[in-house]
Amino acid sequence: QLQLVESGGGLAQSGGSLTLSCAASGSPLDTYTITWFRQAPGEARVGILCISTEHSTNFFEDSVKGRFTISRDNRKNLVTLQMNNRKPEDTGTYYCAGRSNRVCVAQAGFYDYWGHGTQVSVSP
Image 1 (cartoon, rainbow, N blue to C red):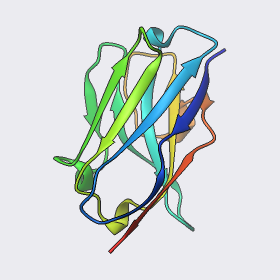
Image 2: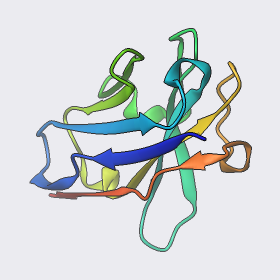
Image 3: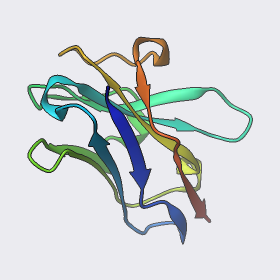
C-alpha cells in the first residue's frame, strides 16, 4: 500500500521560491499518478498540479501556470513541487495524493492515498 509523506513547507515572503517533496514508500511509485492539492484555511481541498505515470503534467489551476512545476523520480520514489514567484494566495496546506491510474484528475475523491500535508505560508 502506498504511503506518502510531504515535506518542505514553511513561511516566506512573496516572490520567493520553495520546493515541496512527496516521498513515497510501501509500493513502487511508477504505477501511481500523483497530484498536489492545496487547502486554504476554511476552504475545500483543490487539485493544482498533477503528474501521470507517463510523466505528463496537468495544471488544474491557472494561477500557478508559469510559476509551479511538478516532477517525479521513480527511482528515488519522490515527487517534487517547485514553487516560484510565490504569492499570498498560495498559502495553505499542501497535500500529495496518489491513485493507481495513469490519468490525471482534479477531484480529490479519485485519490486513494494521501499524505498528512505540509503548511505553506506566503506573506505580502
